Image 1 (cartoon, rainbow, N blue to C red):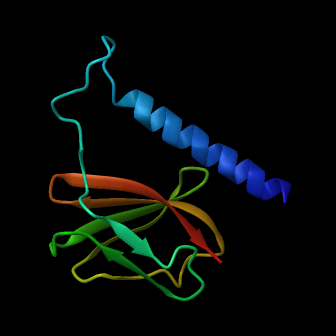
Image 2: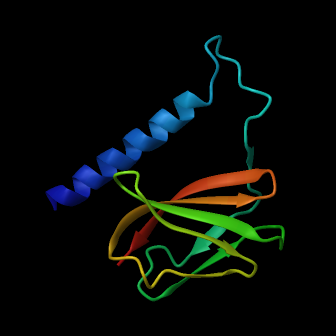
Length: 112
């Protein structure tokens, strides 16, 4: 149980640091700041099978990167449909980064 709290704390720290890194010293945001991905849904989450489905408003291909809680990239792929095969991932907590054109999103992904 204490491992879960550790992983959640690490995830919170990673998200906090990434949001701070996007601001300039004067507090303004860069003109190159990422656009949020419209109507993004990732399901099921937590994942208990081999597949996760990623939906957004657009049907364009999505570049996917998945990181473990230590920041190591464990998967990188491009999906043209909604389905992502996660059978190679061991149970745990991951960070999934999704890029679709100029839009990007980062979410937590739990594999059971």
